[in-house]
Length: 103
Figure 1 (cartoon, rainbow, N blue to C red):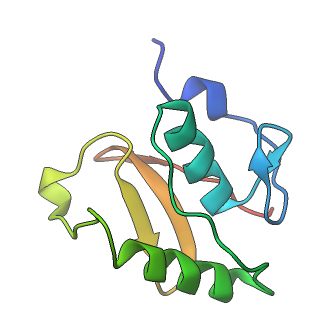
Figure 2: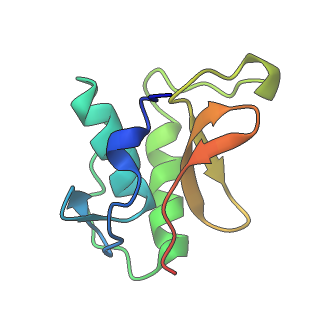
């Protein structure tokens, strides 16, 4: 069965990566949204670590049309922001998320 996630499975990890040549967790989110015609905010600085990347994503999420939703209302491609582990993923369904990790 084909899924909207199929073209993103197996992409290589790359710090600050923003293309199919390599992505970090926010780069994967930007790639997915960009290919759907939606531009996510650019991180203007080169974060020194995952914590800085997550802080920049949270700052970007505080403006515009970003909203906090109940997980019961989540839809495919909703962004998942994990504060405790400084990570971003995309909602697939109640049991799956699309994300990338360094190892």
